[in-house]
Image (cartoon, rainbow, N blue to C red; front, side):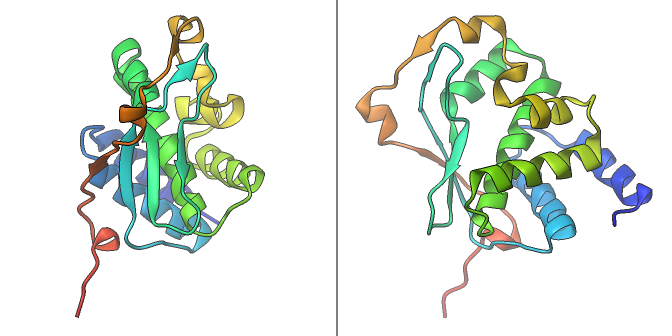
Length: 177
């Protein structure tokens, strides 16, 4: 069972995070998953790739099973960054990374991973926080109206060229002897 003090600490740490620093956000998520699920996965590679969207239908991110790779949809991230507040963007980014990191820890069933993400999010932030709202109502719940009316299909070139983010933390570094 997690204490109120631990919850308050997680909330304070989240509030201090900068959405430009994927490494710090990822370190925070690793701490949370270790605390709640007693699991971790070293060597995660984070890639951003244009996956597009079609009138609100989209894939926010995915973990390639059997790899240490996590990909986030640049198209959706861009819309959230440009069309919503920093708080909503941060909540969206946190939710995506938490969900995909849970997948990397051998939780392959989507329903189970969503439930774990929901439970952790609500335990820390509650149902009224934007993270809790995403956990309950889904990724599209915070997107602007415009996003639900438009479509964007990436070119084949965009689909094949992910932008990898260097994650600077001990769990993402390999040592070769």
